[in-house]
Image 1: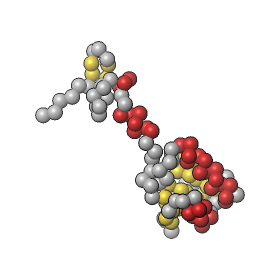
Image 2: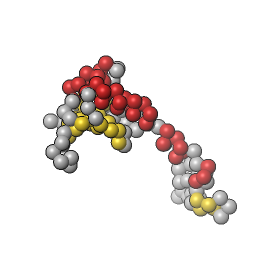
Image 3: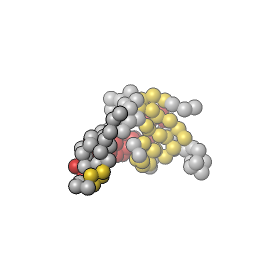
Image 4: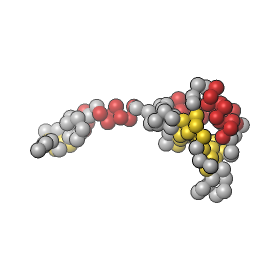
Length: 116
């Protein structure tokens, strides 16, 4: 049976992954620095839950937050539309799937169209 230390009176709570004190834990910092996304760039169109407004979504980019914001700005200016970056997903106002696909191909990504 595996046993692990959960709490120490000397250092307090212990990280369940690396066994170090939570204040000195290195595994959580490494997980946060790793960009989210699986590398498969998916472009889709969505209008549910948005009051009938259509948005173009770009998901799966394996970029950090700064690079993702910069790419979002490039895509919005290419489409001539507004938008935002939330939780690793680029949202562009309007139905611009074809323009976004072309722009991503020019930037060296291999986007795939998803949805209907």
